[in-house]
Length: 187
Image (cartoon, rainbow, N blue to C red; front, top):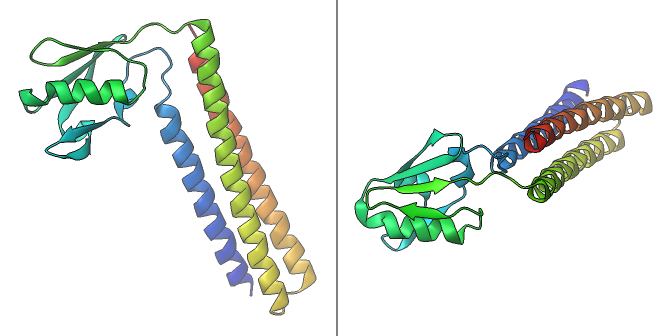
């Protein structure tokens, strides 16, 4: 029976790990004033009639802390890439020089920094909700085992272990969000 408890806890941990990984990926998209190719990771461009991720039709690089360059593999894609960047609402203004697209990343205003911190905290809250859902699933699984003959003491111990894991993951999310907030607010 304890193997089944461990299976349920391991499954919940895997879900919590994926919530933290998703949070980390989402936070990469929130810029902190420095140019980064990941700022364009969500940009989709029309490529021969289908929407395609930008990184599959061009090389995206940074030349310095304030400039992103997008070098398309086909020159004919310049206009489509510029349109895709504008339509993605990342707040960047692409400029074409006929060979590549150059994006100057403007410095963040204090107000914009505060908005980005709010967005980061909202992503952190989504991750915490996901972790709480994993806790609920694990506790439901333990209750199911209790109905199948698991002793009350083992069930309580298992629920306490699940809560400890949830607390650890919640603290990990808080640390990630605090680091991102510090990164965003640093001028």
